[in-house]
Length: 449
Ligand SMILES: [Fe+2]
Image (cartoon, rainbow, N blue to C red; front, side):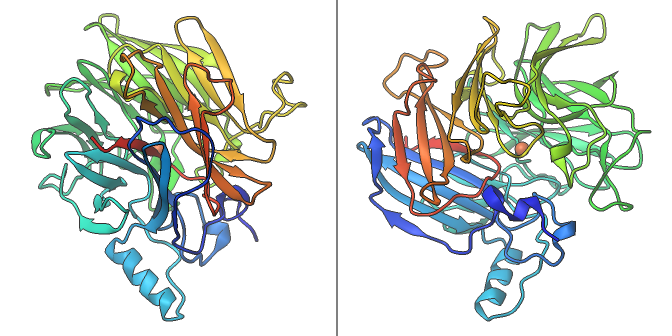
């Protein structure tokens, strides 16, 4: 039996590739200098396709290095944790590698404290990568003596440069908010007590100027249905923790599933959180069964209420903001429509004016409008990361969106670079890679400076 995460745009690739001086359509901005990196699971072996789900599998990072208006290289490399290195040795020796390598650094890749870090969660070790994506080794940055380490969706405060993490471990009755300074030293750890026997899936959180916002959802780690199950008896809650530590305040809400947050900000008493939310129950082996939407939650700390409002009802995920505005008031957000979730955008679908199956969406959350950049019908686009215009004045949407887009006509992928201000216009540049990049998880533009 097949599995959607092993086929089509998700199908893993078999080789590590190095390609130099890549062809470009359009023109790369001459002042962009750095790397666009994105990571995702790329299984080495699968014992039982029916039991496979997306997050299983060795992490592989795909990167393009840009300088002086040229795309100097593309590289893809497995992140060689001990388990992945052993599995690669087995493959090389003609043996069958293990099907499950969990947890493997396969969720996010960021730059912090001058290092390139591949991240996972739930106790998996952060790994440091070299500039050309070779694995340096495990990196203790953001780790605590209790065995917690920086989670995949750690967020950098653009004002202080501090890295904020919400870390959790299966079976532990508490999570931790960990602050790591720009030099890589942990400067604050706050324990966050959790309720119930089963640890909730705390994949993402939100950070505002003054608060850490935690989403305690009914999707829990379980020994009954490894690794997750939807527990209807688990009270869904939103937790609000002052950034400076202290007690978390929990506000009960109806059962829901949150995959990712776009951003959050507050004025001291009211917190605004934009997030990708869907109703439960959620089957993690079949996320296609849910339709996540972009919602805005307003947390009124004086009244103790959470107001929930739909912003955009089209199925979407992988929301990103210009990270210079992370935890600060934002106007714009970007998200992806991919074959991962729910109803695709089709002529016969719920939005007949949008005749494509794959798109990036730009949200103007002040005017309440959206712009859509559609790709070819059979293309596959994932998360787009925002790269600020290095010569710009710091306006929120003065920059570029970067994403890998599988081009079905070529049987390979392009790194597509869109202007954030001319979002529906033709791409600024398409860097043509020699191979396909499977749909994956998260990444960043990491400037050299
Ligand atoms: Fe994620």
